[in-house]
Length: 234
Image (cartoon, rainbow, N blue to C red; front, side, top):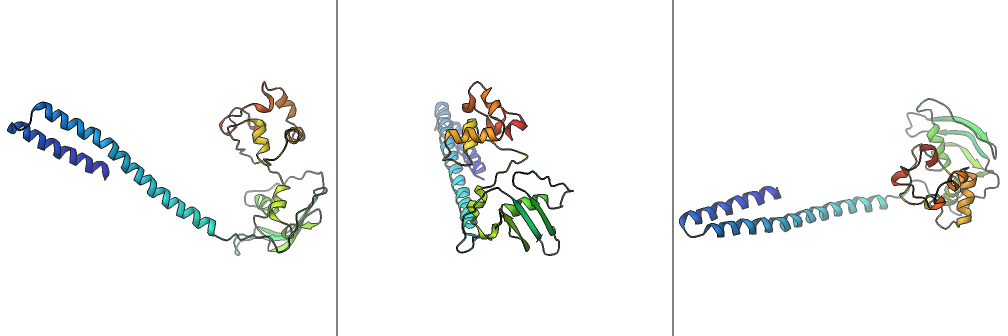
């Protein structure tokens, strides 16, 4: 709409200037000058129009953002909830049932235990509830029946911050920031010391790989970690 108005205005003014030249009221030089003035004027006016549209869109986005912030969380800490105390890290699902939709159950009376220091693989077809189990463990959702405990502490009775600070996750599609390896390792805990960062790398069995890099922990990983392979990013 804005471009159309400018175009019609420019055409109208050029026609008036051309009529003035034909009538002898304007010279050809003045006609060219009018054209140059209009071109110089249209650029800043177009910019102002673009800025106005950006401001209007930003106001709409801000309204949406504050609306989301104002939505009360469904999962909240219980009154008097204590911090999770991890000694070994044993996880237990006891007769857990959960569904996103009451008409379609996802987990039905699921029970299993992951002993401290052991690894367990969840295998099954799509929709079987593998991702749901990890979301429940993070307490993104509360179970409808049963209980989930870590070292004997029910996760619904501890603070969410302490629970999530005690769990690490390696997604299939790892997103890294365009910064150093040290920065990306420290991202999960910004106050970690260099020694703690290096210890985390050793536990993840990537310390030897980092040591072989020319700049070590100060190596830039590139946008989304494009300078690293998929396994190295994980």
